[in-house]
Length: 386
Length: 211
Image 1 (cartoon, rainbow over the protein chains, first blue to last red):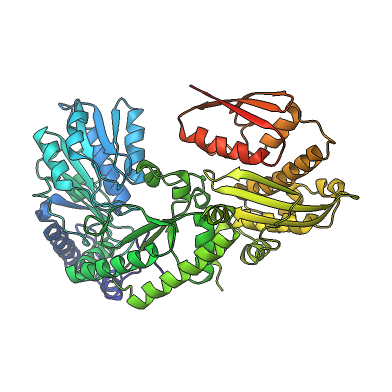
Image 2 (tube, rainbow over the protein chains, first blue to last red):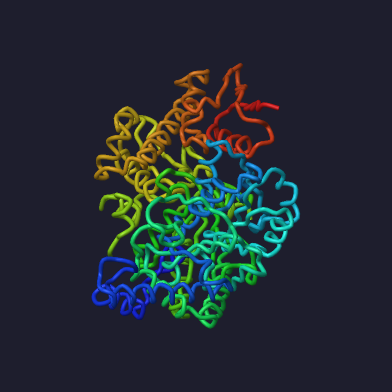
């Protein structure tokens, strides 16, 4: 049983069918060396896909470019904006809980003459839009995500966009986790650049998109032909793009609503385990498929290993689980102790997750936490005190 | 069972066996000696309970409790199995490498778990010998005990991490100067871990953090 859908998701079979058609039969590329028919078919399919993506975020199709995924979208947006727009300042403003692809490119740019501001977040992971104003002197770009990858915090993007626009700054939003699951409107949110990904909504891996508001200048990061407005040159991943759009169409508001209901049930069931604590905000300001809970007195890697033996896949912010032995930067940024980061357990639902699976996951986690607590000196210390 | 995650981590079958069914887990209520090494902040901590045959300095019984990853649990379990019934002299010959090898090897980034379980044993022996009056509680003794206290940031003991600035012993009073500011999260976690490390010894601890 797979409850790690913020990591990746299973491909929707309907998406696979369509992709197969584009790989085996309609295998042309726009402006390629193939005959007129194949070429045109691919071009049309890509433009149709572009319309689907654009419509989902209330943008124009010309404002959407296809990329190889969320990481590439974030890099093209941030590097591209930093290397352009020279009339603005040299400060890049982002939050402490962004995805690594944002934090690392911003960090790299500080070695190339840029200044960096890392915005603090509160106990639930929220950036305070009002405090943002004080950080914008000499700024060029603000980059704040929509939904957090670990604790599901849904930022007030519209309020942040408002501040950025009133200061005449570019605003990039990494919406990789929320795209097609939560409502996104680039007009009301006042976003200039928005990153999206396919593989978190049952689309194929290796494809994503970047929204670039009409008039926003980006310097290209990759050089080649003029495809995707020169921002993402090279032969397009036609089957991937077509599959991505199909996955978007197949992910409905109803799916999101169902995930949200099950997510609330799962959260309540897990919080009924003694000494457990929810990381991130309560329901309506939280990504519809995300649960993240710290179970005191036990360590996350051990939890995951036991769950894996029982066929349940989840995730953890524990340092022991990371190859570099580093605790989750997100749990630390929201003021969580090291102990809370070591025991943080993330469960993320898919559109196919069932109530039975939620019940099984709860029961299994309960057993494992009990087993490990029975072995833990920390749990004993507390029960003696009580 | 697939044990896919175990494979990804590079855990051997023996490691997984000891993780799933740890030997000698629990407490000994009337233990002669307890020792606690590692730190909650590190996510890597064990507590040992030992009972000795005083005539032969033989480990009659040993149990452990763990807060940590699968490797932490497995190495502690294996260590207790390997030393149970041995005299202190014999048990001291068991190295962290022996523990790792008997487990069929550990992933490189998990070797520190074997080191920690071995240190837990050493701390227990030191405390036993101090209680018997066989070793003097001096600077050297204090340093050897502090090898079991970890710096959560670097994940190594606080002597290697250069967090211990100075240790002085005057009679029963041990004074430690530490490179951590008094109001930090680190100081709080160190204070608890250091007190735990010396728990049960007839001494007085004075911890001095930077202002």
